[in-house]
Image (cartoon, rainbow, N blue to C red; front, side, top):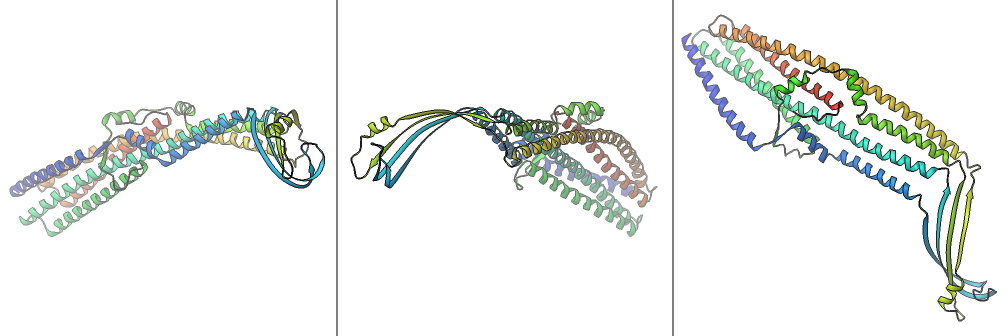
Length: 454
């Protein structure tokens, strides 16, 4: 028994030295890696994401539409010219008599026009485009929000997998130490091959757990990199784990109605639905405006020059001065029947407006459900965290007692392995509960419009 104790001591010292070397190597590698906080991960996504850039282009288009609708109120001004060649009988531009001739006539004109009344269509289109510009801005914020939540989820998956890999490696070290003890005891005649085989199986299981944890960590890093629009082969960074203070903050309680009322004023999905409803309401007025008469003021001036191929011509300046003319007039157009186009457009606009009213209410209902679920999830996560923490501490203490008894031969290997398995599973459950609590807390912060950091 004394030999086993010394062997176990040296085994532990050897593992500690090896672990220290591994830790030093890991620290050296980590120092060369970039450290990215959750805030920085969100910022990189916002800067690089293509969907956000595309939504920004939609905002720019809406801004152009607003500028154009405002410019439509100004008078139009157009210049033009035309040149015609005619043969045979035509009007002599000098004597104003009909004669056979080959004639080239060039006309020039400058015209202007302005709508005096058009059912307020243009004014309502300006109002509608103002609202649509704000709606596109809200759509941009909605795109950002959706992606922020994805980054937060992926980031937490990475830090969870980091802790899971760390725990799996520690469990592997314990399994390897157990195997060494079993071999030493078998050499001393105190253990059988069955005991050693069982220890080997435990090592194999622990190695598989390490491999699975490493694979999960690699995949989670890849997912986070893709959200940040980083190259798949450029993952030389590590994340920052939350602290005890973050866990204490996460255990804060919330009232569903207070969170909902706060989110209602800032959540972009709600704001977008409200703006779409307002824009469609103005759209009804635009459609109705086409049922009214339109009155326009038009004015212009022009002149012409003619060249007769088989005769002498007056000088260019004389002809232009003699034929210079001006006009001004009013144009009234009264819609009477146009295949029910205007009436049908009004009906469609009203239907669309009612649809956006329903959509706005649906968004509010969904937000209420989401927040109620989020608050309930946070409460459940807090309770599960406290429970798993107690369970882990109890299993850890129980395993220490079993290990001490096992080292002096008072507990068989089956009971020892069972206690170790229970302790390992309790640790994994505790890690899961910890990050689930933190994530649920950040979801509440997300809906309250708070900056997500730790």
